Image (tube, rainbow, N blue to C red):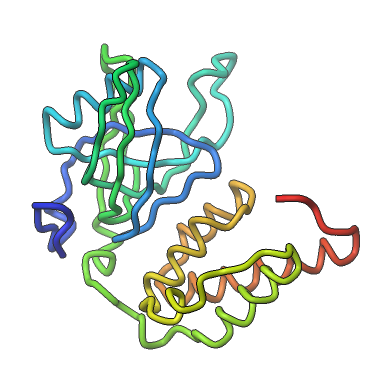
Amino acid sequence: MKVGNVSYNSPGDLPEAIPVFPLPGALLLPRAEMPLNIFEPRYVAMVDAALAGQRVIGMVQPSGPTGRDLDRPSLQNIGCAGRITGFEETGDGRYAITLTGIARFHIREEMATATPFRLCRVTAAAFAGDFLEHAEAATVDRTAVLKTFRAYLEAHNLEADWETVSQASNEMLVNALAMMAPFDPAEKQALLEAPDLRARAETLVAITEMSLARESATGPTLQ
């Protein structure tokens, strides 16, 4: 598959060492786009380093604090690598960037480094299917996904551009809904770790149905 100007066709095409961005509740998935506003100095330095190198950043969720250092949380073992496919300097020290997902990875080890941001050795060997566009897309129960999505919107008095939704591929639909849904970090991690697109769609439907059931029992919450 091609991400930006570079082709990534197998796990071996992913850099072995990448900077990682721990961000609670953030979910990046293969071929999906994530806009980010980068303003903390350490992450501005991370973007500078990525732009000077292979433009790859790993999005990973914190799994909790490490010891007393609340500013350096432990990390989930699975994240998703993305390539910077768009960036803008704001003039006030920030970056507005777009990450396009490449593939998921396992963290092999965190590297000792003098940089203000964190670097990890990673492997995508277990996620070879992520490099295949539309893998498992035909097996997705699109009807169930759309039915649940519609129920969620109606419960929260929200609307969608149904013409755009109808034109989206199964992969684009499932991944976009998984990324934008206001689920908690554990639920987002479950969506990330789903073994394939079909399983991610089924997990998305299940989590959404549970969320609607909770809200029905306690009253809806404002999103």
